[in-house]
Length: 388
Image (tube, rainbow, N blue to C red; front, side, top):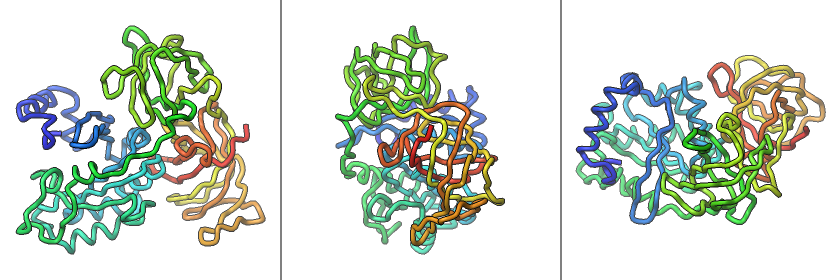
């Protein structure tokens, strides 16, 4: 924000003073972000909203909430000797975050290999290639939806301005802001049914909800339904990036003042829908699941926490339906008694409460999920069918 001129030096110093007086000082002392911060800036071609999601392993659920609102993820990793290796070990944060943003529906990822100016790195091409090559297998395709670039957050090198050949003779690609400017427009279902996934709410002389428009458009005065409770509401006011608007469209992170519902009747993961075309609500569904990391076997009765769009629900395995061969895609003819790490299966999951979800092939944004247990991401999956 400082490099783009959205924040001047005096304002930056003011924020630093305020941070020392507030609780977020503790956050900074520990090097942790615990909330999803929000800011926006403009480049020559684009208006960009930044969602600063937590990186620490204790706050991964908050990070998933931030990722579910994003179109592009920027994964900042340290090239410093020792720090990069710790993040990429099995169970490390870098590996987990790369998997989570893909599962959350993020379409592009930029990996900024930071601290290239560190004395242990000194803009070394060999170290850059080592970091890049170890993080490629994260579900994105290099050159298509995955881009790597070196940088220095401390000096700002290759974030806004190019770096001289004397310092880094081997990189001739765009700076970070140039890359963002040249990204192709993202196609969105503007004419589809309204789907606004809600992730927060507050009271300001009425109920105000915050969410991301996934499809359709919403105008002031429009009648909608809040799912899964099927509560009819009317939109009184709209904001996009804190600017009041008459209409909001897909891809925008928005605030809406609603008539017809109390603040305490709204939860994260609720969805605003068109009255004549609401989303699916269920509590039993079949899903294709990849077991990422789990020391013991998973059997019927196993329970975990499901994160799907902005919803968080406790679910249990009702039935294991079949295994899927990772190489051939063939399904087993017999029902497995258990599944284990690195296996793919189809299972039936059940929650105690009804929540909003969709089959992945109909609406991917509400059909992909992660399962977490004891602070670790255990599995990723996609909804195949809602049973009940």
